[in-house]
Length: 143
Image 1: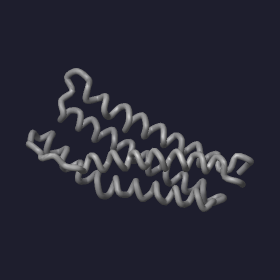
Image 2: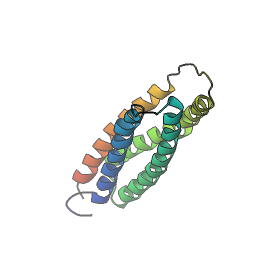
Image 3: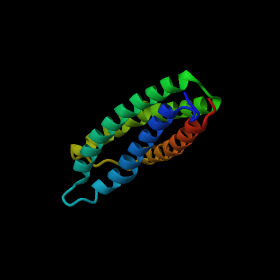
């Protein structure tokens, strides 16, 4: 560690933030506007993209945890714990339910509206705030 606090942890947090912004905020809504993209096709693409993103998110969360373990700060641990909680809710609670709904839509079923997608979006917004705060805390944390 040096005068910058936890530079590796901060860099990882900002890489993760960039990925969430690029995929959740930019790519996801734009793909449905592309010519020829049906709802089923867009959902199929989204399922693959988010599966890949989620794998990378778990790796980044684990790497940030290791980086914080070198010289922990209370604020970093609180933010990291909140990030793990959000990620766990998304991966273990919401994603399986959203994947089932996606499978039904891809199969041609008429699926009723559900708030699950809005909850996932809200958790992405929370994750963006937490990652921004974590990156700032980690880069400015006193060694």
